[in-house]
Image (cartoon, rainbow, N blue to C red; front, side, top):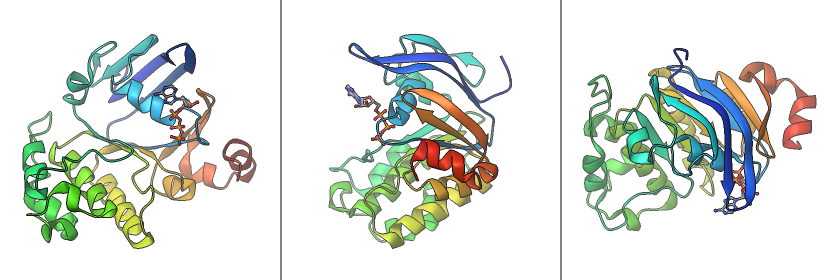
Length: 237
Ligand SMILES: Nc1ncnc2c1ncn2[C@@H]1O[C@H](COP(=O)(O)OP(=O)(O)OP(=O)(O)O)[C@@H](O)[C@H]1O
């Protein structure tokens, strides 16, 4: 196929008998920031889970870093350079902040170690103050920072963030967006889902809009942010 880092072709996914994704095709180029928008229940999380193999596609193809990954388990897929921060986080509550970060560390697929323990702490000073605390003792915002920090410690080529600011206080939300902007400038590709579509559009190059498991709109984020009619139609705003 092409030089895309991640590519999906005609993906279908089911939960039991419910047909959720109806033939999704997309591509994310190296270094490209992509937003994934759509109202509640339209299939954003399902698409992400299918892309990384957590949910097995019922049809279609997934290619990561030039390799066909259709039907492969998530461990194999993310090893090709994907840092995934799931909705609801995913830190180890019984391990300390330090342990959570250190155990995630690995060089990237090209041997790069741009994101070290020190750099993650510089990026999230709040974590530096909590190194000895258990993951479960952190505030929601700190857990989210730790989850992103863990993903960065894997030196990913693509960072996937699903509702990273969900339920967090405004100051923490601002902090998370600051880091999303910073990560973008380092050239790591991203796939970002967030309820605040304005912020998503401001922090991405391109955006995809899902409606009932189908991609109904795709465009340059800046252009889309000025398209009130489309935003109203697909996002109900
Ligand atoms: N584990 C599951 N089993 C059965 N159906 C599910 C499951 N998870 C999600 N669904 C259904 O699949 C559809 C898509 O859900 P999904 O979570 O992917 O949407 P979303 O766009 O991420 O929405 P939200 O922002 O509410 O998370 C919804 O109709 C939802 O009810």
